[in-house]
Length: 181
Ligand code: DQA
Image (tube, rainbow, N blue to C red; front, side, top):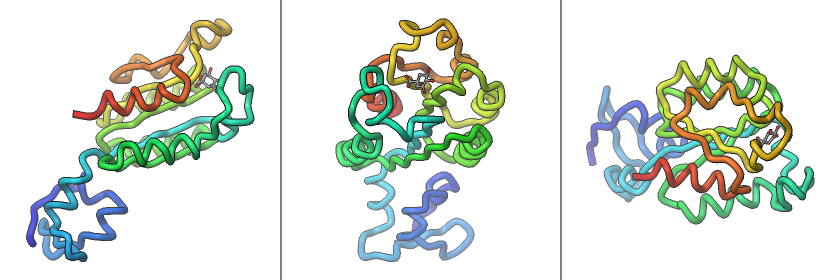
């Protein structure tokens, strides 16, 4: 099976494992499954990027952020949207978040970004979101507008496709749905 596919499609680690490049722009399938089918079943490539302290979900301020760990939630999300290629990255370090946004920001179909506390402080993350071509949906678990004043400001929102705030972990699922055709 020969297939013309673009850089975006082949930047996926998963697809690289099952497809191989036979010439400049031709890819073949390593498996018995035809390449066109593999590309067909994985509709969109989406990444969730979480900022500082979101690794503590499940044990952090449960009254605000709930009891579920992000990993448990993420596994369920991946199963429910099995046709989408959804990956996850978390860091407590501003520069690492910027590096990841730059890395995925020209090849993915969508970024779901909860920059957590950096939302309210980081011009660097805002500039990264502004620079890339992949659309970003900003999410927050809690309703930041019902909390302290400093959480009302987002440096990131002006450069996003949209913002989903206050629906608990469901905010991520709503953001995902906003990307699906
Ligand atoms: C948060 C809200 C931020 O104000 C806070 O610093 C977080 C989480 C949320 O998802 O509700 O860490 O982004």
